[in-house]
Length: 249
Length: 214
Image (cartoon, rainbow over all chains, first blue to last red; front, side):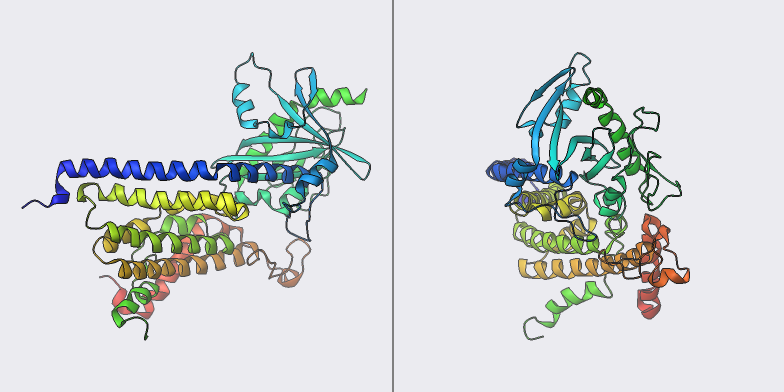
């Protein structure tokens, strides 16, 4: 005799039941936890921005953010102004750091859309930092980060992160030895044109002494992630060039 | 072993030695290649699989009499995926840092063939307690291999262990680097994981003739 569980009707009913149970379970969990997750992401953004301008708890070798309990206060203290650049228009917006860069990048594919470019202006020990968010593609998934610059577009600090780069290889873009190489590096060539920073193989400069060559040393075994960082720096920061020109006057 | 009967204890010990899921059954190779470039990632993955396989095996075993055989593979896949996603969401809400470390592993856990393999071969035919032990045993067997491979790849490839520079500083030329030692960057690439794995299999089979297939 045929087993009960082999019947087609049973199979279909089971499949429907399972989908309903699992679907509602997941939907319930996701929506119940959403406020917590959003809050964690918001705090992380603030930590990232502060990290780029050098407000962090770094020890000798690892990257450590300011604590989640004090980050809101520190963010208020160090970030003096948040602006949104849209073409020639510059507006102040205290929530500019919440702008979704991914959405802006997608919307900007439509040529008629004027992309919103957030920029955070921080001040620490009398020095002014201009911090821009960037986002691009790595090998497997998205990579993003924050770059702190001075008014001449010389990098003062950088933070990179990734969604799913290979551990031990591409994932190392968020390690100190890589991020710290960017500090002091020029985004402009000596004659003043915007060139970006290339993550270069074989530039014979492993400890990055030459800060004006627009190159930092790549990580072995992560060529595509490195190229992604190069491309992201170039295409994203280029859009801020007109704003930085206005600072000169 | 007062706690477990001899047969139950074997469920845990066999996968650690002569029935290892990676070196004998040759399952889970994909994740063994992908994440063993550093020791920390290997350990995190081993713990994550331990968790998912332990619980997943019990769930599948409890459902074994009601799962329609025609769609059992899909049902197994749904169980793993649901477990993994719920864990990931909970971590994101309450242990954000940890969830960032795990991010890349989530997809790898769902597709790990050891998990599907144990559901199919063991949990569907055995009771929950046995299935639980089998899950723990197999994930430990997997974890041990992962950690051995990760240990050698990180040590020889980057000169570090868990991020600590155990061999000295390659740029400042201290420690063994002062004598002209160089890191082998090739160790960081996936093919070397296969070669390290091959060496482990070779050692294991040369010690136990019974494992050699003729």
